[in-house]
Length: 120
Length: 240
Image (cartoon, rainbow over the protein chains, first blue to last red):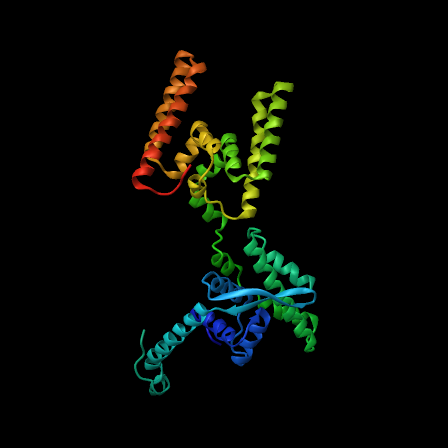
């Protein structure tokens, strides 16, 4: 299981990534996240909708009323130009982060097998 | 389905009924209901589906933080206990804030209380207790405010208002005191409390109550002039 602390900074990126493919709405996005993460990660409702509120406030996405479900119009979200720019920045940031952390984690198995130094 | 709505209602109870909150609540409820229907259609039992949907809800604090909604304790700490008491339980501050808010609901509450106060006073000569009707009135306005969102007195004090509001702001002693407290204006406080001391001295020592109130009005005028002067020098924008 992945700790949500690590993911917190990237929830917005996950949403922007999905919205950069097509407009979508809350539940569809939740399912898509589960599907692509092979059920390893499911985003909580409060996390998802706080992220939508934040992205709307920053002008990275816009919302509109779309097709109806059970008589109620659904709220759809669309990524904006500013949102796309921000998404690309976050992608670059992740590439750097990944390279950095890889440098500290790739040898973990061989080291632990040696059973040598114990830290802390 | 009703269980989901009940659950979401319960989770949102502490939050103000603002547009942003209600919209978020509606969206979350819709997502959860869609999730629920989806699970049923995939052959889950009602209980299983309900459990899965509810465990997916998350933590309401996340929403509180994102929408910048403060808890009651934080709000009180920011506004100050004394300021809050004065704001809601001093009839003249209540009256002034009602003018500034241009809120019909607050006006109804205030004038009902005023009418009750005067009726009890004149008809039953119960002046000694009739003022107490302002306590429940203040409480009602406090609750009305709480439904809206956290109240930021500082911006209320600094927001632009008309001539009537300005006159009351500086010449009703209670409003003046409240504004001085909210602004943490030490010079204003010195002027106000000196004037209050002179007022009480003239009243009690010389029994000049009929004219001693003029001192408080002069103090209001002094504070007004000082604020105008400070404003034109440092220039923050709060026009009258």
